[in-house]
Length: 525
Image 1 (cartoon, rainbow, N blue to C red):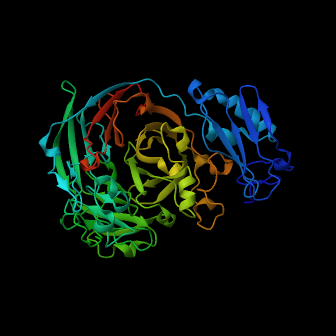
Image 2 (image 1 turned 30 degrees about the horizontal axis):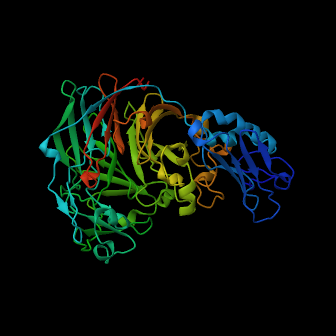
Image 3 (image 1 turned 30 degrees about the vertical axis):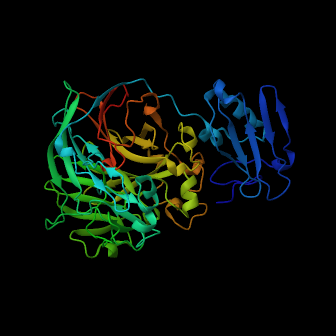
C-alpha cells in the first residue's frame, strides 16, 4: 500500500493533487474562529480549530489536525454536536475534497432509543468477603465476591436465571496502589515495574448461577462451580508464565513475590452449551478455554507459537488462535465471547486494538479484531473489524487516548448478528452489528505483522478496512442509575436485556447490580 498523502493513495482513500499545506491561511467566521496553519515548513504541525459557539451554548470545540510532515491527512481530535457536522463538511470541501468517510469518526455518536430500566440488588451473604488491608496501608477494603465478568442465559432455561462468572479475584496493579493508601515503592519492591498485587492469591475463579426476583427487585446466588484443572485441582487467578506475550509479576498483599501459574485463568466472556459445556474468554493470554459442566478445564486454545508457555499446565493446550494476537496490550485480550444460537460457532472480540506495531499505535487505534470460529474443530472461519468509538465522543473523559475505551462483552443473535458492549470507566454503549461476507478480512494482508501501515494504524473509515456498520441500542449516559463497569450481557426469558457489572471484588467499594432493560430493540431472531 502506498502512503496516504497529497497526490497519492493509501488503503483505497482517494487524495487530491496539489499542496494543500501551502494554500492554508487564516479565516475569520462571524460566530467563531477558524484557524488553519500555513504548513510551509516540513516539520510544522498545522492545526485547524473550529469554534462554532461557546461551549456552554450547546456546542463544544471541534479540532482537526493536519500534519504535512507525516501523512497529510486530517485526524479527528475532539467531536462536535450534530449541529457542527455541516460546518465540518464545508471545511472538507475547502481543503480539496476530503472524502465524507474520512470525517465519519468526527461525528457525534448515534442517539440511542429511550428505555426502561429495573435495577436489582442483593443482600445475599454469599457475595460478601472479609475486609482486607494491604501492608503499608491504613485503608480497609470491604471485599466482595465479584460475579459480573460475563453472563449467559441458555434458551429454554428459567426466564430470570443466568450463568455468570468471576475473573481472577481482587487485584491491583502496582502503578495504581497510591489510590489505596499503600506505599507502592515498599509493597512492590520485588517487582517495581511490572508487579500486580493479589490480596486473595488463593482465590479460585468460579462460575455462578444467579436468579432474579422481579417482585422484590433482588437477586441471589443459586449455584457456584469453582474452575478446576483437568484432573480436578483448583485453578488460580495468578498470571501465566508468558514469554511471547507481555505479562506481570504476581505479589501478595504483603508484597511477597508469588510464582506465576500455568494453571492460572483470568475468565471473562462466557458461553454455556445445552450439555453444560462452558466456553470462556481469557484477557491475559489471550486464550479460549473449554470447561466441562463440572468446571474442569479440558482444553485451552492459545495463539500459535505460544504453546510452550503452558507446557506445565494440567489441561490440553492447542495453538489454534492467530499468532498476531500475542500483540495484545497487557490485560486487553479476549474479554468478549459468545456462541451462535445453534451452538456451531463461537465469536470472540479483542478488548482493544492490538499494540501493532507498538504501544503508541494501540493508544490511538480504534480498529478491534472480531473472530468467528468453528466450535468443534477450532478453525477460525472469519475475521471482521469492529470500529470503536473515539474516546472524544464519550462525555467526561479526560484522557486523549482511544485506549480508554474498551470492549467488555458481546452477545450473539441469529443470522450472524452481534451486540457489542463498549465502554469507558464512566459510560457504556451497546451497538448491534451484522457480519457480512464482503467484510471478512481473514487471510488478508491485515493478518501479516509485516504489513505497514498495520490495521491498527489505519483509519477505521478507510475502504480497505471494511469496518462493520454499527447501530446504537443503549447508552448509559442518560441513565445515572446504571452502574459503571458493565461486563455481562444476556437476554432474559421475557425479552428484556440483562446487564451485570464487575464490582472488582469491592476494592473500590462497589457492589454487584443487575439491570433488566426494556426498549433496546434487541431481538434474538
